[in-house]
Length: 359
Image (cartoon, rainbow, N blue to C red; front, top):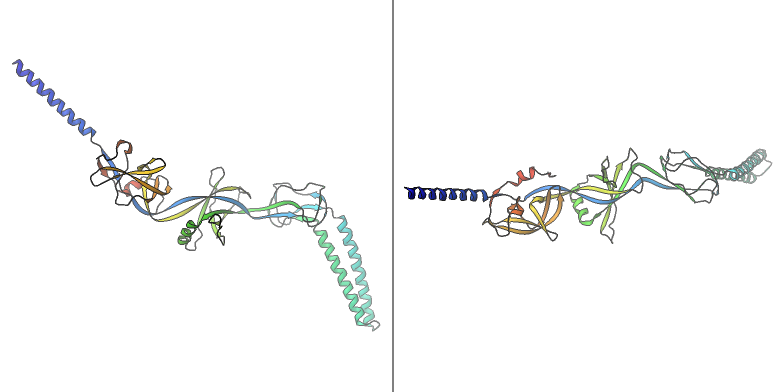
């Protein structure tokens, strides 16, 4: 009886051990998630270093020689078209104008007297013509002195913002001396250089439209208003192989100023881009790899070439096709040449859970 009980106990232990082993085997069996690369028309955002310019940025220079008598504005001040900015001492030019006025009056009186005599046939017509020419010359000299006097006042040629002063009150300025700069910042021209290959892709897809771009400012914040690519320069830079694009941005709040820098963000379309999730890749010595599952369910690592990067997505230019099955999750749980069990997830479903900017 004891032998029978002992035998029954041993069998029970063996049965329990067998069941436990089977359960452990089932627990150890893992089904990995696998997907395929997918081809889609998409677009990437490319950054270009840019220079920001006012649509009008000019130098204000003295047109006459003299002492700077008055400064009516301050540095950084907004001014209106026609507003008086600087006054060069006008006394000398006023005196010259008064002298020219007197000479013009005298010549006019002479001409009128000569005309009366000519009408009476007392003097020859040639003498009248000479008197007329003398009067006209005096008027022209008077007009010239008025222009010189006018040039002692420096006025704003357009609405804008005054830059720093290069002279101070009482300075003796010569004709052509730089006084300050004036910028019209109502709109801004932003210049950036595009490589030849990207220029050709752009022209192939632009179809005469004017694409919009964004401006990332120096504080890493996007400017509130989009810009429009309005023009491209006429020729490439032979040294860099780049060509300059110009985008125009509205600047209603006056935030942008001449001379600032930033980054233009331009959308570059890509036809039939081969896309994979970034999380399906791993890196070895600065090279990108994926695990490809072959027909025997064996894991093989494969190097790939990344053409561009989107949020959570890589655009692959070399190393994969849409027929390949790539390991999506559990990359650290597998080894090279290891056989695995997997579940194939449609790439459309995988991509729908990622932040993908594609058509």
